[in-house]
Length: 176
Image (cartoon, rainbow, N blue to C red):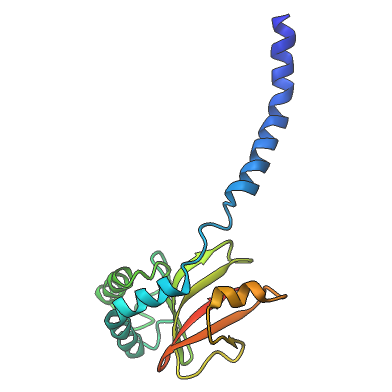
């Protein structure tokens, strides 16, 4: 009798495992993660940390060879080829942490993008952050109100939304 029970349990284990994994993927959404901060939370962050953002912009403009900086990588990979010292890299990372910019920044062309929050996978996720640029991205849809509400109303989810904050500052939701 016990042999039959143990045999049934062994046979059922893979199915139970697959069922639990499926439930976890559906319920926990490990590739989605936490929802993006609300526009209001992001705007509060910007107001509270604006001085730090302005300081970062000045520094980035002084280092045009630095294209991307995240907590664990940079482009170009060699800071010397970007003309940036190790101390300068550490200063960038400290300031990004003080400004609550979790994923660093990118600087291509005129725009500087501060990546505050990401969700999902790089191939199908989204990011929310701040952009310093003289004009909106040419691919962006300009939104007057809440970016999240605008995103929810879109039929196509492959979009870049921007909302002017002040001057050259934009709030951005990138779902491309």
